[in-house]
Image (spheres, helix red, strand yellow):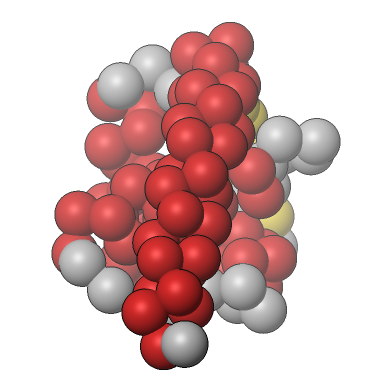
Length: 107
């Protein structure tokens, strides 16, 4: 898959993983793992980038003698997910066109 496309999909998957409930790094990975492969070394730069873009907020919480960072989606993050869903409708229309054209070509 094209790197830029996968990067955009990962961003939206991370935002979707925290859409309904704040979460922390490892749990985010576990949430999205059934759908797309992501490692810790990939996730944390995404979280920083989304935070810098104002799409999520970070809240430190003490946990077993350590500090765990919980991530919360902001309105800007919710807007990005909505934008993705609208863009995806257009992508699916193009996909159907290409698939139908290929099917017609095979006949």
